[in-house]
Length: 225
Image 1 (cartoon, rainbow, N blue to C red):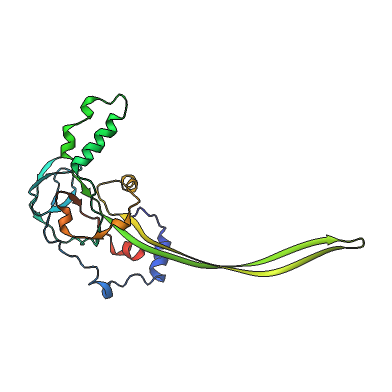
Image 2: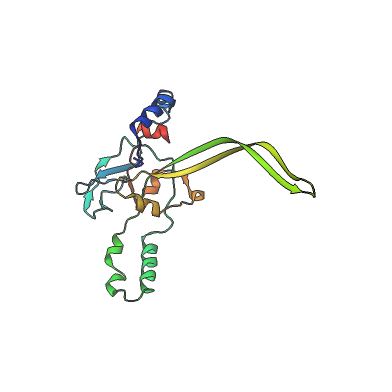
């Protein structure tokens, strides 16, 4: 899920020495929730799993452009906690794209006001957010040497110190993409996110948009986050 590589003995050592996440004690916290008012489909052409609002009956797959009927109720998916709603609609996007294209030399006329732009569909992509922290302490044996001379002798003074340095780092809301369809470079290109615009999720925000079904984190990978 995260493209990490580990030696077998490292995995065994981690399993033997770490307490991990207590799934039995917290199973109610991470149980699957049904998203009311939504439907989903699996594209028969490319395999993408797409979520949208319940009034959508047909749509175009944003990954392979095939037209599909949306008939399947959405179950067995973790309900998102937060969402960052789209700020521009399709018309505004088309306007911005045409302004950008007109500003470039040698752009074909067919590229501007292309009918394909009318079929653009906004897609919400899933991300996991996790917090992490690390702390440490390092001790050093240090010396400070000073030398001088007078008319008779050369002197050297050496002072000995014990130096201790403590450090602590805290990372909050580090994003990890949950997309099955888009490659990591594409997902990384849309970061960073403005978390100040993140609000509580409601299915109504999917109206007029699509959302990719998240790539479920395995129990072992969550316990290591």
